[in-house]
Length: 316
Image (cartoon, rainbow, N blue to C red):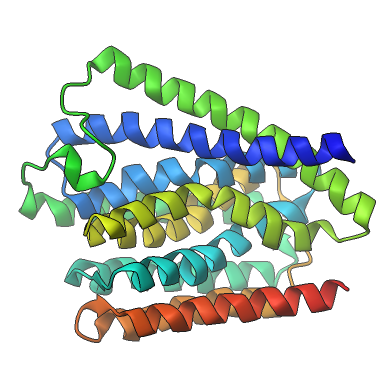
């Protein structure tokens, strides 16, 4: 059992290191394009920190673990909104841009509703995966076009990732490639450890995906949003979470279902409902004064704690 724990813990840390390196290299490239922090948070950073979820879900699907694939995404989205966004807001109130309320949060809510609709038909098919990917492409185009009006010059300090202004292009590419390699290795270790631990302890793989794996693959989002909040970069903190949730459903499950259809994953309605409810709560919370206050962050965090307790009780 010790070696399984080492695989799981080692996978967590390798995922975290890989995501950090990938985000660093990708953000350096984005800086040279003059992209706004919000767009970087919604796209480059969100995609980079969502790579663990992508690799875990694809590898789980190829291993015929559809419950782990979908459970990882649903659990990560709940963790992103309840734990990460809630904790970030409690550390420092987060200002919210109008674009986030008009476009990004509604897309997140709509994506969650569409996933629920698809799951009612006993899983995700390849055509449904294709629909998710087409919607992901449309969202990216809309985000880029919306941000074209506000092209500005930003500094690496805006991203909370240190001085990367003078990073050479070759080094950026090496960062990106090495980050992806670390993510692949970390995902493999995490899947190997989590699946075998689930079998050893008699816990369903779906519950493991919704909790242990979901939190583990959400560590990059937690680190990025927490650092951004402390550095008063609300755009990165909020954009990272909302963007990651959209990526998780549209891109990750879309790509995973395209690789291999996901039969009925056995995700409980309390989990699906929690993801939807937290998504819906974001709209009034963020719209009130265009900020997410500490008290609203506390509500999100308390919701996540209650959700985890319910999962543990159901598993016992």
